Each structure stands twice: as C-alpha cells, then as structure tokens.
Image 1 (cartoon, rainbow, N blue to C red):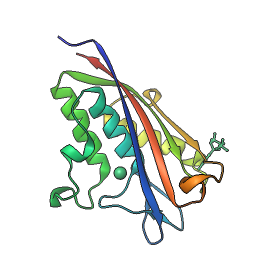
Image 2 (cartoon, rainbow, N blue to C red):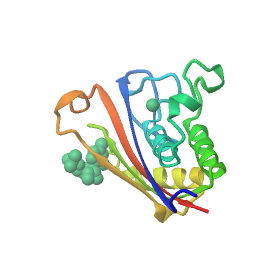
Image 3 (spheres, rainbow, N blue to C red):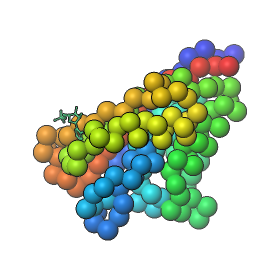
Image 4 (cartoon, protein in one colour):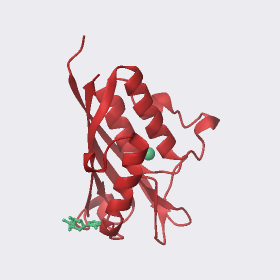
Length: 161
Ligand code: C5P
Ligand code: MG
C-alpha cells in the first residue's frame, strides 16, 4: 500500500485576448479581455486539476481531457476538476486541501477571493477553509507582466482513505 499522504503540483498559462471571458475557478471576472483556449481557459481549475492528478500519480490534464476530444470542447473546466477528484477517489485518495496562486497583472482579483474559494470548495467537495486562493502581479515584467498572459500555480494534498 502506498504512503498515507501525497502532494501534487500544477501550473497553467493561457494567452490574454479580447472578446473572451475571464473565468477563474469557475467564477466570471468582470474584465475587458479574457483568456484564449479550447475550453473555457480556466487556469485556476486547470492548475488544480493537474495538482490532484499529480498527487495521485494519474498523469496530467491533457491525458484525461485531450483538447482534440469534442466531448471537452468549450467545457466548463470545473467538470474536469470534479472528474479529477473522482479519479483520485477511485485510486483511494481524498483531497485534504488546495493552495493556488493566480499571477495576473490586472484586474485586481482580491474582491473575487471568497467567491472563487466557495466555487472551488463546492466543486472539490471540501470545506471552505481547505481552499486557499492567492493573487500576484508579475511586476510588469515578462509576458504576464506585460499583460499578454495569465498563469496559475496550485498544490494539492491528498490522504489515503
Ligand atoms: O503582486 P503584488 O505583490 O503587487 O500583489 C499585491 C497584492 O495585490 C496581492 O497580495 C493580492 O492580494 C493583490 N492582487 C490582486 N489582483 C491581482 C494581483 C494582486 O488582488 N491581479
Ligand atoms: Mg489550461
């Protein structure tokens, strides 16, 4: 039997474009630009999905949800995240907690923190105080800092049932 605790790391990046929505952790952020992608381009959901898959040693998001698969085209990324939680559960693991950082130059996201945490907690099926969401700018440096892309990092802790 494997170890009782497992951690996993996730990261995602999407281009910033006009005429697309900005969805972070399943929450629509008011903004005059959005994120490009095959799905809804929810970098937070994608990074957490990879963190959970990673912790359970179940590969990565592209392996389970290929962007060539019509089933996932335009998909609500919370569905992918919920499916990753299910896969981890089938492998014998429950999610303990999640921590995530969104790196985006603008807009300010702190007023969305609680809504994003609530959305993720409901999707993953864990308590609100087990979901942390943090925000950072890139100090105007690099593609994120120049407003050309947005990134999210995530870490997940799983416990064996
Ligand atoms: O990147 P920086 O250290 O300047 O961020 C300062 C604070 O601004 C962060 O701790 C976060 O609370 C907030 N922030 C935000 N939305 C962003 C970037 C940062 O609310 N897009
Ligand atoms: Mg993505």
